[in-house]
Length: 127
Length: 240
Image (cartoon, rainbow over all chains, first blue to last red; front, side, top):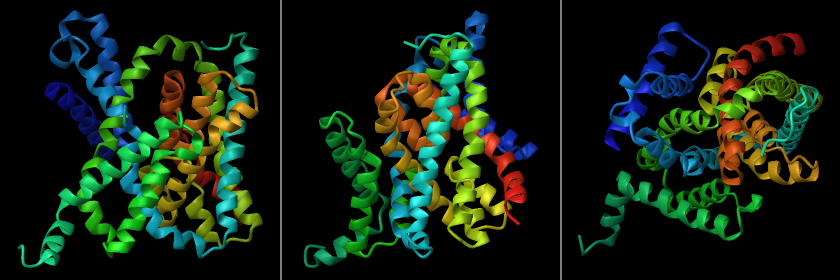
C-alpha cells in the first residue's frame, strides 16, 4: 500500500517537474497519469519491471481506493466557491444562466459528435 | 479548560483536526443520502457538502483560510487521484483504443463549443471584457483554468468560481440530459461529462458507470491541453 502510494506520488512529482521545466500547458498530474499508464503497459511487456507496487494488483488497488471517493476531493474547493458566489452575483443572475446554457450545449455537442463519428466508422454501441 | 468552553472552541477551531473532520463527516452524510436515492442527480454529494459546510463556516464566523488549513489534506489528494485515473484507463485500454477516432473528433468539437459558447453568450449578455475572459476557460480543471485566466490578465478567482459551478451544473444535468436524448453509449456520455464538467463531471461519471468514468477521465485530461491552446486564440478572434 505504502509502495503503491509512493509510486503514484512519484509519477505526479516527475510530471510536475517536466511540466514546470518545459513550461507545458498541462497539469503535472495529467502527465503523471500518462507516466503511470506507460509503466503499467511496460510491465506487461517486460517481466523485470513487475516488482513491488507493480505486482499483485498493488498500484491498481491503491488507485481504485483513491478514485472510489473522487467526489470528496472537490469539497474543499467547492466550499471556497460558496463564499465567493457574490463575485459572480455582482454581474447579475444572467451569468448563472449563461454558464448553465453553455454546459448543456457543450454536453450535447460532444456526445452527438462522438455518436455520429462512431456510427460513421461502423462501431456498435459499447457494452 | 473546563472553566471556559470558549477557550476549547478557540483551540479546536484553529486546528486542522476540526475542519478535516467536518469535511469528512459532512461528505459521508451527503454521500449516504446520494446512495440512498440511488445516485439521484439532485442529491449530488459535492453540491450538498459544499453548502452545508459553507453555512457552518458562516454561522461560526470561520474564515476560509482557517477551514482550508484542515481541508487541504483532502484537497491535496486531487493530484494523486488524477494520476490514479491511469489504472481504469489501463484496464479498459482495448475499448479506448477502439474508440480513438470518435474521441479525438468529439474532443475538438467539444472544446471549441465550450469556449465559443460561453464567449458568445457572455458577449450577448453585455458582460464586461475582463469578466468574459475570466469565464472563457470554465470547462477545464481549476488549476489549468486559473493559469489561463492569469495569462489573459483576467480574474483567476472569478474563474475558479465559474469552474466549480460549471462542474456542479454539468454533474447534475448530464444524466437526465443524456437519458432524454436517448444516448445509451456510456463511452460518449462519459466523454461529454469530462469535456463539459472536468473532474466533478468525471466523479459523477464514475458513480454512474465505470466505462463512462474512464472516458470522462481521458476527456478531462485532453481538454486541459486543448483549451489552454484554444482560449487565447478564441478570445482574439471573437472579442474585439
